[in-house]
Amino acid sequence: MHPILEKQGVKWDEATGTVSDAKRRSPLVPLTEAKQPPNAAIIQIRAFRAGRAIGNVLVERLIKVGMDVIAYSGSQHKLSRMKEAFDHSPRLLTVQGDVRNADEMFVAADGVDVIFCGIYLTYDENAEKVQQMLKAIETVSSRTGAKVVIIEGVYRPSGQNKLLLANFDQRYLHLNSPELYGAGASNTIFYYSLKKIAKGQKVKVLGNPSVKREYLYLNDAAQYAVELALKESSYGKTWRLRGGPTVSTEALLTIAASTVNIAPRFELISDWKLRLLRAYEPRSRALLDRYESNKNTNSNILEAVRLLLMKLLLLKQ
Image (cartoon, rainbow, N blue to C red):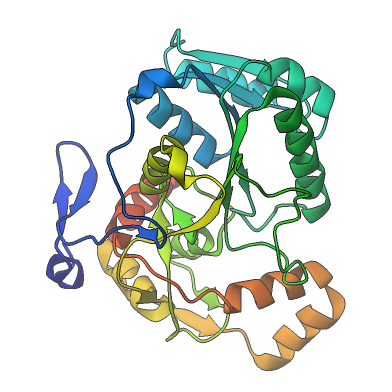
């Protein structure tokens, strides 16, 4: 256990392979005082766009609290893997379809209470496809009366200053999430850094390494999303998820390197290289602008280091 994390009250459980944070503050801002969620039985079925890491942990969380779940994705391979991961649970139904096609989504979502959707949680999200998906979800929600929970990450292009919904009303619950980490949470700058360290390679750092930013453990994000979705008073608002104290890239890489007993090696991407990226690659420009503006919070960093580094090291063997 790294002493920095010990001071923060983080404890590693070798038996379960998880961490606990005895000093973790409430992850929710502001907005209303947290209360116990209502009896889960009042919500019968939920639907979710499956496929990414957040999809798996959300499905797991929903099943644990007694919900029937429809996992919706364009990839039959991902849906099959999900069914196997949950041991073909009778509470899980998988449906293949285009997330941008309102008619296909309507067939899958007819009769559901809530639709979950994750956007801009990884750097490879296509903004045009995201907007098409949100438009389809709006249409389906209007036709079915289903509520919508949108979990948004830090990778929204800098030119888009707001969530583009025609009518953000009491049906919608908008959750702003910091960069997520945990097993399966790939295609993030955090994951890239850990992968380089696991291979003993130099990490190229974007921006000022001393700037403190927010990171949120994937399973915690799913737990908070489900708890809020179960509260009627949560809807019609935007919530921000947080984990605790901020951490800088420099400190994060030092902790990660010490976990595998190596000296951290990283270098800043020079200004002229950043200027080239911004000039010749619009997607990189939007990504860099968005990432530099993310200066929020998290404490359970060791969970990512232990789970992801060990997984990557095993893959090397």
